[in-house]
Length: 252
Length: 189
Image 1 (tube, helix red, strand yellow):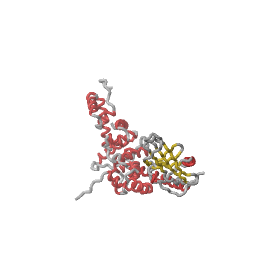
Image 2 (cartoon, each protein chain N blue to C red; image 1 turned 135 degrees about the horizontal axis):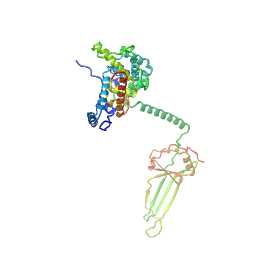
Image 3 (cartoon, chains in turn brown, purple; image 1 turned 180 degrees about the vertical axis):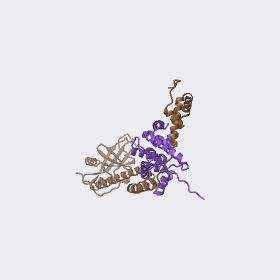
Image 4 (cartoon, chains in turn red, brown; image 1 turned 90 degrees about the vertical axis):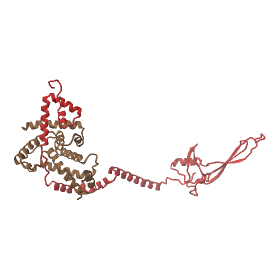
């Protein structure tokens, strides 16, 4: 503490002042203090002399044989520095970090091994059941002027041994102009979608056992599960492609 | 007559990466004085400084291809040098050897125009300062060497040492203070 009751400047402050590494505000603070504090002035001079002595040290010239010695040591360290180093250098020239390249290489190797393994499994356990879709079911509705509708739907079903065409008919009688309930048919209405139902309980359990079941067809396919049936809605009935002439799996 | 363009440090790194050994030779000529002097001031012994310098160049040769350019090449080389000196010497005071003996052969004053008397006086003075500097603990000594001998500013020193500027300021101040005490003990006011 100075005679005026203020704190002396720290050695950090004096040292940084010599280096001109203080802010303008700090420089002002130091210079105002030095105007009244001889003790800090002595400290500053003393530090200044130390810095002066350091800076007056001559730079040393390196030994003349240093370059030759360095080259010799680099040559002796050749296996690590030259072979791996050159490889590393070539990787370093690529626009991505070597670490990223190595990661990609590892992921690629892993994927290749997984793919090969999966191929082997597939050869042993085919994951696709080639099924035959029955010819598209047809459905017609006939409407009468009085609002009555007669529908009939035909569909192919697998009986366990062969495909059979079954027909279902339904009638909703309307009211004739004369007030009777005689059926009166006028227009035929085409149903937009063909509906193929693999609906027997056996088929359902079969599908459940083979979740990878694939239906081979050319068009887009929608699948929905409803009431224990696997229902496949084909937007375009012409897209069905029969891939095998026989049922591949026997359902007893 | 056309003069060849001066290659930047970055150019040297790039050429070295492409396997141009001349680039490393050029890099050696650019930085060997700097590395040797820092090593010498850190070790306080010319023989050890020579070993340290060779090892630093070996490390540079090994890692230069990985130099990412996040700092300047000079800063990177200073960092390698300081780290290697600390690793080899330990973070402690180093023993000093008299420059009158075998080591004096390495003391080649750069300014040869001085007369013999002033050269002898300067050498004596340098010896005392070098010996006193060796008494300063390593964290302070490296900061003082980088500031007062290598003339880096505080920001550059902070990058080399990987510390904040406030720490640099504090280490330099304490280093100079320790050096002042050591010089007084050594009979130099």
